[in-house]
Amino acid sequence: QDEGNNIIAQACYQIAKEFDIEPYDEHTGKGVLRHIIGRIGQSGWMIILVTATEQLPYKEKWVEKLTQRIPQVETIVHNVNGKRTNVILGPKNNILYGDGTITDHIKDLQFTLSPHSFFQVNPEQTTVLYDQALEYADLKGDETVIDAYCGTGTISLFLAHKAKHVIGIEIVEPAIINARENAQRNGYDNTEFIVADAAVEMPKLYKAGVRPDVIVFDPIRAGCKEEVLTSAAGMEPKRIVYVSCNPATMARDIEILTHYGYELKEVQPVDMFPMTAHVEAVALLTRSETTQ
View 1 (cartoon, rainbow, N blue to C red):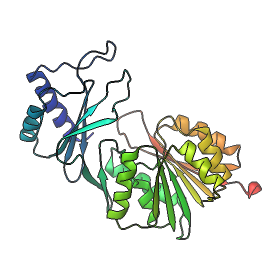
View 2 (cartoon, rainbow, N blue to C red; view 1 turned 180 degrees about the horizontal axis):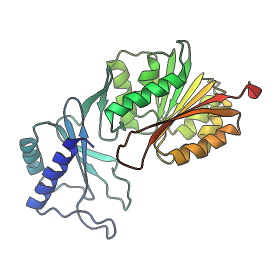
View 3 (cartoon, one colour; view 1 turned 45 degrees about the vertical axis):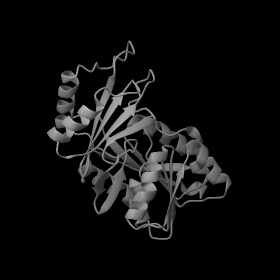
View 4 (spheres, one colour; view 1 turned 90 degrees about the vertical axis):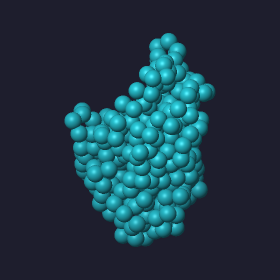
């Protein structure tokens, strides 16, 4: 991970200790401070302090000390997660410093990121991954592409560079707001971003007669819901590009797609998480000739 995250973690640990702020205990449900999240952007750093309580004790002191100790800090956000869950972020953000966003980039594309926005953690390997996805998409300039689970529109904008029209779908509304801003910032007017659960929206688009040439999946570790896969297959795209951080669920989903007339052509692993057992992978599936 970026050394900046170690700097953030150490500074937050010291401040929490200094003001005797009790860490949250997942087993008992007691305590205050659940998580410290650092995001290292091109423009500056974001720190997210996640608490189990509505209030962050000594919040003015947090801002004062973090900005003194870490000059790279561009924004500090207090996130509230009061549920008994192992999910990291709660739905509520209170901006303590800055505007709640940072800027990052992949190649020549600039992205605005907010606390709930997903963004790949390894920028060098992200370029490798997205170049591979783009190669598999094999766009010529007149295609319609659906990017399911589009997040802040990172893959969408890579695709928009070569496609006629890109439709991005994402359930997290702040990420879609960022995606629309990112498309505008980077000068792409051939994109459309929809706030929706892909499992609900894909069947709707299918019923509405949308027939993309290429569909790109980049789901969470749990993979795709079956309704997404069946709707995607029903749309009969020439190619499906599947990006995954969990090869096991990707294999499960690919098997389902093979029952609907798709053939797995190639899988390319990408070492997104060096020195760990985890790997990112991108797969290409095409409609088998017997179903065309």
